[in-house]
Length: 254
Image 1 (cartoon, helix red, strand yellow):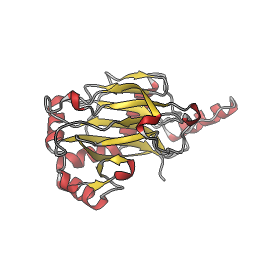
Image 2: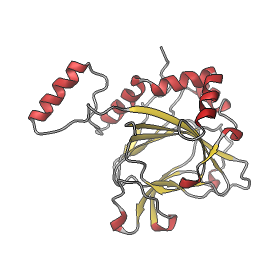
Image 3: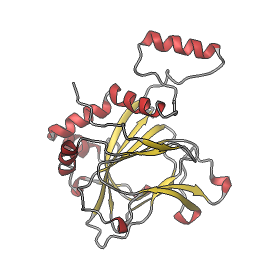
């Protein structure tokens, strides 16, 4: 059985303008250091300039290299199996439900129980989402710490929940460089609604809050029509310094 990598015991959410929060510590310290030490080198990554100044190694971008790397490394094979498991998805949804965010799924119950819930909910005039298929995937992400950024956006329509897991050693990041995940709001209220995930320039949004880039944490948020977020251009002295993360998506197949 795959071990449980993540703990949400310390997950704290804010609810306005959309559900987003921080889980820290996320991973047992020794295991976290192993994952950081085994993070793939930048030569493996594919350019993802359509979202900003970013590189990605994932099932979608650099897929052949991604799967070759996963196959070659026992710890990442185990982590990949964990993210792909029903238990991982159920654990995230339960952590959110415990904090008053119910996305309508009952992945931890039997098929018969789920059918009974849907029938009962339909009788009340409601509608749950149990019939949708959910899956999870992750990408290795890097942003150059000088100039690297991700433009304000809300995430694609197939996504339900995103986790951005910091991958860095204690003391290797200077907070003065930036790198935090910002919560944004468009200055023009007609742009608040963004289900289809258009991007905006940085000067078109205001920053409501920011989660600093720190070790052993996950920024966790729910995709909504107004889940605007970004990473502003960073100011480190050298582009060879990298902001490394795992970006995990729970989504429906596209």
